[in-house]
Image: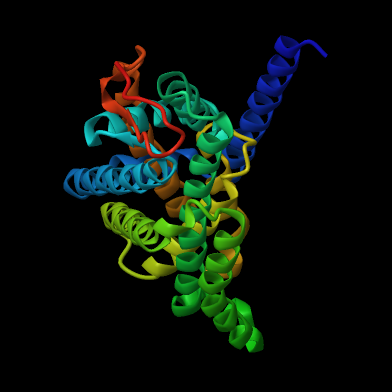
Length: 302
């Protein structure tokens, strides 16, 4: 099949799924109620949420910089964050992080001449590192929040899972990514900081909507939904988080309209930060890249 035709078919499929998800969400909620809820949101809390989300992305960019350094691609902090923002802009319309990661791999391959395989390993391990911490926090919040009843008599098994997540990850990481494994402690710290900032971000978003109870339950469900958005089926994850809230609100005793408003506001904040990458669209200059001569004998970019 022609490559262009294949890409167009994938794009059409994602547009279709995104559209269906949005239609399903809007058919299940009172749009007027959701709109009024969002319009009444506190501007101060919304600003604080925006600030915390931005800080979370600073930590995430530093985490990725560690992995690039491990393969001998040394970036200045400014250049690294610029690449990260441009990647976020790509991710806004190419779901699952494929667009942003692909952009970074392409640019750094052109500039550093490092093998594409090494660069892909770095961005892949970066995503896995973040996903493990996201999973850990999602399970923890679900255990200590009001939705813990869903585990019933098997909550001991979930606690066991919680304590096994990281040891299992560390063992697999050492086996599958031996070169990148040496930064595991530092990058895991930055992953916890990234998700911690986003938890505070969601806390302020919920406060802005007037939520004063079951906050951890909303956060747990939101983090579980965020894990699902990693599967590249919709644009920017829009529709997926909202559908999770709609599917779960009765069972978990949460407000459906608040859940949808909450997830939509998070998407807006994500889009606002991501669009900053649009102003950096042109190909970045190469003077932010230094290739470690001790790893494959390449030289500094001009």
